[in-house]
Length: 158
Image 1 (tube, one colour):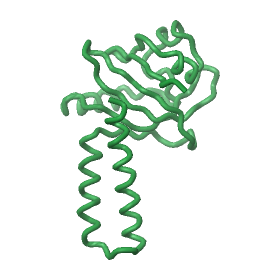
Image 2 (cartoon, one colour; image 1 turned 90 degrees about the vertical axis):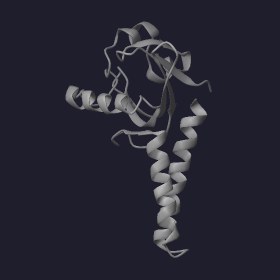
Image 3 (tube, one colour; image 1 turned 180 degrees about the vertical axis):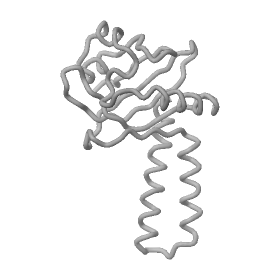
Image 4 (cartoon, one colour; image 1 turned 45 degrees about the horizontal axis):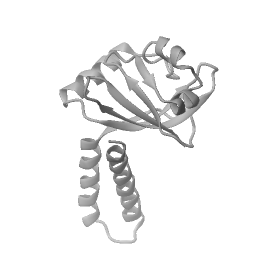
């Protein structure tokens, strides 16, 4: 299967999309370009929350983002996707989408490589004080595995 990619303009509109992305989203390129930012979100946009997120993200130097979210297609169906977003040379962004199993009602998760690395290292430090083969040790190991996977996903997409 081809990688589903989108080129997103700085204002959040779509400039281009791969055939795999159009198939995943159930749209033509013309339809996708005509949509306002956030049109495929299952929840109405919260402009104040979006502005706060963007301010914080830009204040951190606009690092690569990863996470999971639900996309609501124009036909009303929903699909859960794993995503990675990275800046490209011309001031736009490349978004890579991959469908994943899971309930579409889950809230989105968004993380940066720095956040993942910090949480990963903190979990490793906690493990030192936990007796091996306890439930807490196994839970912490599972968290480390998730952080490792997220970190690798961010860099694999780059």
